[in-house]
Structures are given as C-alpha cells and as structure tokens.
Length: 493
Image (cartoon, rainbow, N blue to C red; front, top):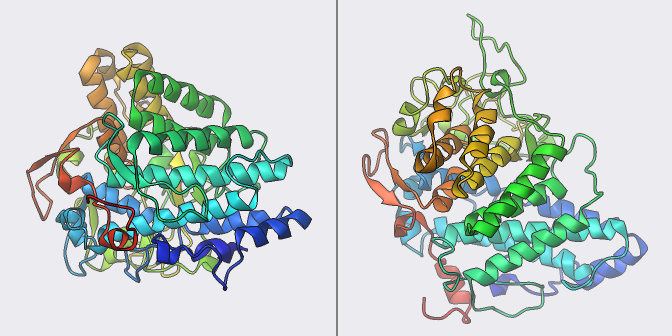
C-alpha cells in the first residue's frame, strides 16, 4: 500500500489518475472497507517520502526529501555556509543561481517533491471519500487528519520557496490540487493557498484529537504537530488575528504535549580530555530527544548512507562535510552568540557543527549506514514562535518571559533581555531563533516572517559582506521549467 504513495510525480504526465502499476484511490477505498487499517500503510508511505532519496525526480546527492530542502533554505538565508567546492553540491544554491534560473534542477526538485506529497495525500483523502467527507470511524478520522495535515505541510513549504511573502494575498503563486482527478490547474492566489492550508490543518487538529502515536515513534503527525504546522502558517501570514492564534496554538503544545525544552547538557557535546563523549543525551541525533515533537527514527532498513542530511552535514558520518565540502555557520552569526552561551560550543574553530549534530560514535567519517535520526519539529520552535507573536502584538513582557525560558537553559547571564522592548526585542527573538535552530531549516522561514535583510559573513565563498532583503529574487525559487512546459494552465510566466 505504501508504494501507492511513493511513486507519484508532480507534472500532469506524472499524475496519471489510475496508473496500471499502482492501486487507485477507488481500489484502496474498496480494500479499506474490509480492513480500514490498510489506509495506515498509505499514510506510512507518505511519511517515507520525507526521507526517501531521489523523491525530487533526480539522482542528485542533495535529493533526499525534507532535510535536503532544509539545507537549501539554510543556505538561502545565508546562515549555513558552503565551506568549499570540491564536489559541487549546493554550489548553485550558495551562488543564488538555482533560484534565478528556472531551468536549474535546484528549483525543480522541491517542486517535484512537495507536489508528490500533495498527490499522495490526495490519494488517501480520495480513498476516504473526498475532501468534504467526515469519516465516522475514529481510525479513518485519524488517517484523514494526517493526510490533510501532510497536504498543508507540502503547500506551506511550496508557498515559502516559490513566493516572496503573503503580501496582499492577490499574487498568483501555486496550482492547487484537492483530489487526484483534477486536470492541470492554473495558479491560485496566496490567499487561496493559505485558506486551504488553514482549513486542512484546522480539520486535522479536530480529527486527530484522541490519536496517539505508537510508543517511541514520532513519525506520524498528531494533534500537536498539526498545531505546530498551523502556527507556522498563521505566523507567515502575520495579521494581528493570526498572531493571537499562534499564541493560543503554541500555548497548547507547550502546556499539554508532554515535550519539554532541552537542557544545556542536551544541546552541546561535553568531552573528556581524550575526546570521549560524556553526555550521550546530546547530539540532536535521536528521536527520543525530549524536545522533539516530530521526527523520524532511521534504521538500517531505511538504507540511507551518503545521500542523506547526515551525509551532507556531519563530519562524523561518511559525508561530503568530512570529505571536503563542510557546511558551517555564517561567521557574522557566530560572532553574535554570547560568550557565555553554551551553543557557542556547538561549533568548532572552523565553525562546523561538530558538537551539535554528530553520530554518537564520533569517529571522523565513520558512520557509513545512517541510523542517526531526523528532526522536523521541536519544542524550542513553539517557545520562539510564541515569543515572536507576542512581541509583534506589543506584549513585550510576556514575550520576554517566553524568550528567557529558552535562554535560561543556554546563557549564564540573561539579564540583558529585561531591557529589550519594541523592535530591539523582536530583533533578539529573530536572532535567537537563528542561533537555536541553526541547521534545522527554520531560519529561512523566520527571515520571511520578519521581512528581514540578511548580510553574508566573511566566510562565504560568494557575495561575502553583501546584503539581501527577504524579497530579493535571489532568495525565492521560480516555478520550474518542467512545470511550465507540462502545465498549459499556467500562463503569463
């Protein structure tokens, strides 16, 4: 059943409604009448897309699902630096070539991947009767909730990568597909895309009330993940009413989800004189991390190796980072980390994240078959989104409290926060978001929410010292050539 999801493309020639080698939504629906649990296989296949290699339609070594595009976004925001060009992966992202040229595969891969997720989600939704059906069985409600949340997740990232911002809502940005039978669709407006995401996630939160993931697993979307995703959608649109909803949603996750903030000894490796790891709870490499709300437990059965996030970023994995193309922190951002902040120790003298992300064995180039896990969402994001929304609504005192809840576990002296208000407080929350979530694909989202201007540090290979506003053409992908060719409903682009 999972294969029903895994091999669906994005252009119309990939969107055959009833391809002979796969089950159709009608076939899945009929089978599920006798055994509703079969739909769980389709949902599992949808989550597999998030880490499976080559789901962006290529065999490139930067084509491995969500975490591959987390690297794209961190580089577009300039917080992650491509430290060398020995192998060339990400060079066109770092040079801002993949964004301005619609013929490049850098813009094609995320488009292909996220629309595959949309098509997979629609396959499940159709099998349950379609968008307007309210399932009667709890088990089917849980499946419908996950499918709608995954569709919204995909459209959220498409809206970030292929639109400069929400604006007045009238800009036409993306085709919307709500089922597997629709022909090629024209571009819908930003408002229409955001309205769909909000509707999907609001329904998902309702349907997932009462749903529990298997013990020890965080791969599936539950109510709290859906609330986190909806928080991101509202924060990206950013009206005062939206920001109030961000506070309500993140408050629920913070108060009721059961997850917590990481402590100081969980965010950075501590080593003895011989380099032996003293705190194995550190490393952002295990789905059991108590702050992780959504993530994937990778095992040998997943068959990941060099073509993976760890294969691009971690020097303790058989990786490009180890072999000659390190991924490092922007020098200007590193300089802004307080001297008494434990997160400064996450990075070595070359600004590689060797004490934040690492295979626990800590053998340089050692992990060949990847079993270190992927994080998609963690509790710190909820605190920072909450603080950001409060600051933007002028609630400086409560915003400072939320920010200090995070920083008290990171910085020895946080008294400076008490003097911050207005724009200075907003700037500090944005800065701390970039520091806390470095390497996790969240800086780009924050840059667009804050309409920020980024300045590249001295260690960038390209455009060092240059500044770019969030709406610069270089920071947003164009609709790829393959979509323009295969979708005649898109005109005027």
